[in-house]
Length: 155
Figure (cartoon, one colour):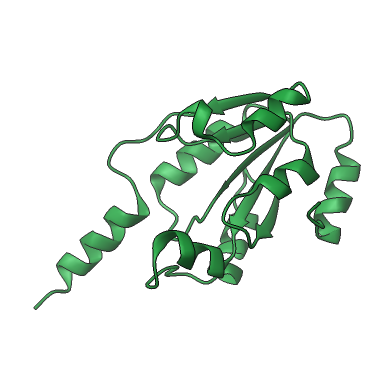
C-alpha cells in the first residue's frame, strides 16, 4: 500500500465521512481544459484530491522532453487552485496504489477516457463508489499547447 504524505493523511482525517473525489494526471502545462475539468470534478463531492505524476513518471508516459514544468512547480500550481483540496505526487505509471490508499468515493478522468479504461475503477466500484468520465473541452491539450509554441518559434 502506498504511504501517503503526512499532509494528505491529516486532510483525510479532517474529511472522515465526507465524499472524496479523486483524479490524476501530469498537469504539465495547465490550460482551460484542465481547469474546467477540475472544477467539474470538485462539484461531485466534498473535496477533490489530485494525484500528480512525478517527473520520472511523466517522462516514461510522455517522452524524454517532458515534463515542461517540474513536479515541484506543478505541485505548487495544483495546490493553489481553488477547486483542489489536496495533492499527492505518485511515482508509478498509474495511480492504482494511491487510489487504494485514499479510497475515494468518486473517481474521475477527463472525457477522453472511457469509464472502463480508468485505472482503479474496479476497486472504487468495489467499495461502493462511482467512476465517471467528465466533459472533455475540445481543442485544449498540453501537447497542442507545446506544438503551437514550437510552431511560433521555428525559423
